Amino acid sequence: MNAAVEHLLARIEAKREEVTALTQDLVRIPTVNPPGDAYEACAHFLGERLAKKGFAVEYVRAIGAPGDSNSHPRTNVVARWTGQGPGECVHFNSHIDVVEAGSGWTYAPFGGQVDQGRVYGRGSCDMKGGLAASVIACEALIESGLPIPGALEISGTVDEESGGFAGVGYLAERGYFSKPRVHHVIIPEPLGVDRICLGHRGVWWAEVETRGRMAHGSMPFLGDSAINHMSAFIHLLESQLQPRLQERRTAEPVEPPGARVSTLNINSIHGGQLEQRYANDERGWPTAQTPAPMVAHSCRAVLDRRFIAEENLEAVKQEIIAMLDELQRTRPGFDYGIRDIMSFVPTATPKDAPVVDATARAIARVLGRQPSYIASPGTYDQKHIVRSGKLQDCIAYGPGILDLAHQPDEYVGIQELVDSAKIMALASLDLTGWTRLAA
Ligand SMILES: [Zn+2]
Image (cartoon, rainbow, N blue to C red; front, side, top):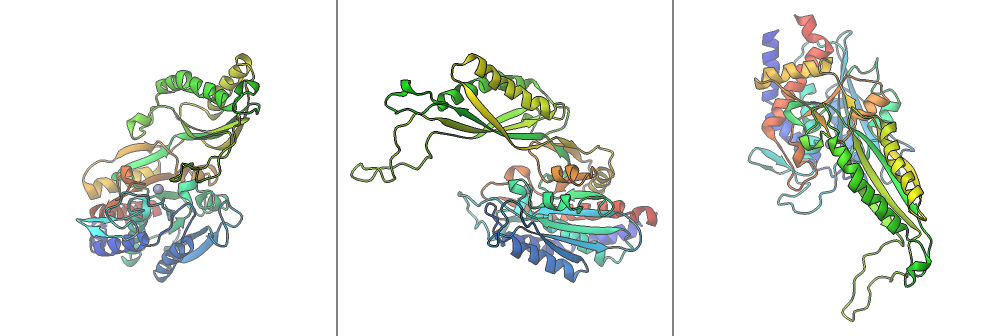
């Protein structure tokens, strides 16, 4: 058994250039989301490669999902390789979308340039490097000729950066992430080559609207400003709620440690007329249509409340609604509405779950050190796998430095690609049941 494992590791070591080239190829497909560019091209690139290696490949377009259109089809790819005889299925799920390049790059964002042992480009770290590592891991397992039972699956899914509803969410509702099809899921997000991410904090997004009464902007005393009412609400959030949240500490190993408390962010705010970018030309005349003087009758803010495993969603909502009700009682003219946008409860896979245990042992074998266990401040596609797929045995594990995600000059280290591919392959041997059969 040891010899077989050594051969497998050597086989992956010999694929250093291949995993680099695959990462480069994937970075060069600019799958920017929003709006969801080039999904079709990326899904087919992956599917065609895996079909040649013996995977059964399926393309699943999320018809009717938000964002799906003929110009921007939400096309996912799911590939399955069936092993020899009964065993369990290990699924590697990667999102193929990346965020916009933005500015500040010294490398071409979609060039996939290699420099000093790193692949640079948007998505190299988050998470096309992880996707490439999982592909190489599975291909090496298949090429090894070992009698692997069960099945290996690889999916490339869309829209993770915008909630994953047309990607893993869509597939999970249709049984792609449930037993008996799938038993263990590894999501190669860039958490670091020796860290296992067990889950994430919860999230509640809500839109709060304050209402006022319109009047001429030169006579504000005749109206009632919705913006002033919103300002009173925000003052309460800052002076009362946020200090309370800072006191609520979780026992989960959330990284960075600053996120081991509850948090609140105001993601956006808008009051009054639709805004434009006002500027003046050389005569001093406005270049855009000028606004009319109005007292705002509506102001809307999107709240982003992240909560810890020790809290529950209903209490999280009620706490904010109680503050709004309090303002309604005490502040003349205060009127509000509140609307849920999205919520997910915290997830935490137990440390003794099979996928955690197998990955931890593989990390120890390949890197010669014990893994650290972490949880994520923000959600990722694990939320859909747990909620819709009802599958608990799921972690995020993959190459790359999380802090580099979404930044200019994002990169992934080639050594990390190779090491994580080895770890994914060894964990798969355990999880499919090969290790037990071979012992
Ligand atoms: Zn990601």
